[in-house]
Image (tube, rainbow, N blue to C red; front, side, top):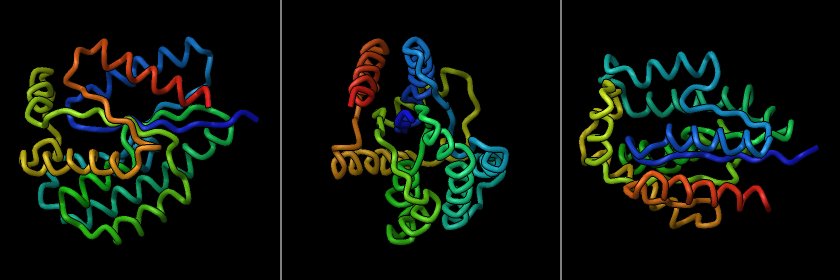
Length: 209
């Protein structure tokens, strides 16, 4: 059986995750690799219902620990229902956000204890660790301007303060510094073609291993 690979695309809001994932989909299809494209929170019927709660602007009074537990619940279902079966079938799994987002938003930005987050996340992922996490790094102010230019309504997390978003950004960069064998940071302020070229090079390097 072919070895499955898990690639996470993560980083700042407005950094171009959707565009990068679309290019990666075309690239893997061209290489005739079977792939599952999914997202967090979400990816399953249960996860998508939790996503609506988490991102709804009507849930502005949500307690940080409630938020954390909802993310963990969605991830637990996602890992068991979708991700692990795909990896066992030898597929490439490309996920829009994963556990790196929880550390960035709930620990670095919200200030929840690392031990609590680690305990819940370990339970949710059941030993699963992505092979590669690509962090699209962008100044939050630039990212929010991009989101606004697209005419999209901001979700609950995008409406957080700039201080919150800057802390989350630092969370991604801190994780990358601590885990250079698994994280790659790409400057998302570059021209799009440069960003896409770097992403595809990193992914191809992983697939050749």
